[in-house]
Image (cartoon, rainbow over all chains, first blue to last red; front, side):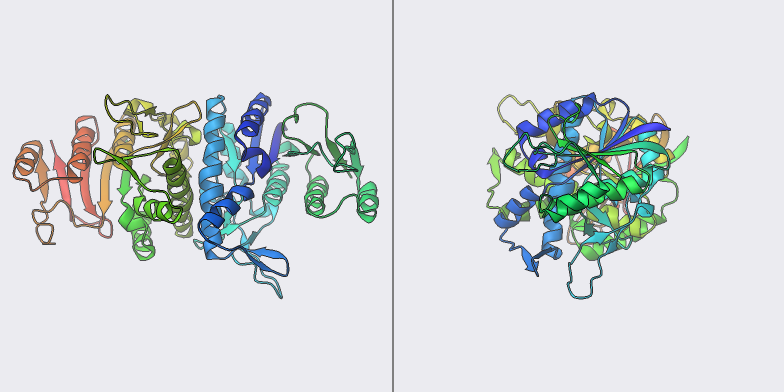
Length: 258
Length: 258
């Protein structure tokens, strides 16, 4: 099987012009077939604020109402995605930007929850990823750049977690490729002490993960991210790591293992 | 040669939910390979206004400064393009949204003008269209949906006239396909009297065009549109027509001829 790298890059990297340039420089150096999945929430929040849209929260969860969906569609699929694509093109990487609607890449379902209406938020499984499209694009030297918008097949766009998109694409593609999933962000990896750059945990296995969670060392937003990592490893992805977006080509960062 | 339809649809059609639904219904009925190019200026103006961005005009021409470029990128490539793609997907048309940066579809140059700095506005020739990408997408049953954003290959996105994009794509593809170029908008075609729906001019040839311009019957924004039509006809496109977006499958509207 051919190698395929699936990279997820966080908003703090791609929303800063200088960081984006450095990331792109590293990304194009990766030889072989690759897919990029990106977030971009900070710009979406800024634009929302400028447009006078107040974020709706229910029980501490952000709700994607119709107005918020328009903003994330504009920002993720328009502004952020096209900036990345144009940057990659300038570095001789034949990038093509996609939402889940484009070429029916990802068909999701609006989230159903017994007590909270999350609004236009989509969930999906690896089986909902159009691997034929991915294979066609990769075989034609195109590099998919996927943003965090999917659709439900009835014309409705849906806001979808970018970490989940990366994990599900990686799992779906593992039937056809040897897949390396790399989560890149502004930190050095998973750290014992967020203040100490040298406290990166080099390797985390399932057992260690439980201990780190119990001890409160892994907490908050890092939990769903690492859950995505283990989900990917358990479902056919060859390797998963969490790295600094400026240094993902070296051996730094955290490697996950079952 | 296979048939290829290149449709340009105007903002007044796609920015209205009901009109977009009707247009999509007609569009998917067209058998064979097709490309859609769309505008979307009205929403861009509305979002600009909400964001407090005042349109810059020099000598009566709209200038695309950095802020305006961000807005048109958000609106054309994000909001409008993805709404159309999701609608087409719901009607079983495997649409894929593109700017000129995606897959390097169109490499343009920033407009150079002796007296006016138009800002981030791009111009290009049919030779700058990536027909290999178009052929790959069409051969894989994908329907390109192109918005009015291009790039210059150095990472810079550029605002580009959608009528020109449609004409240049049509000309570029005429080496590989028998191309029918159809400009669709909210009117019935080219009319002798804008108030009279029954005054559609069925056929306009080059000579008639000069007369209609001289008499002031064709004026304003219709002139560059019809210039694009004749440019396409002179450069290999098989047929060009201007039609109502709700009725483009019948024989109504205006047909252009050399």
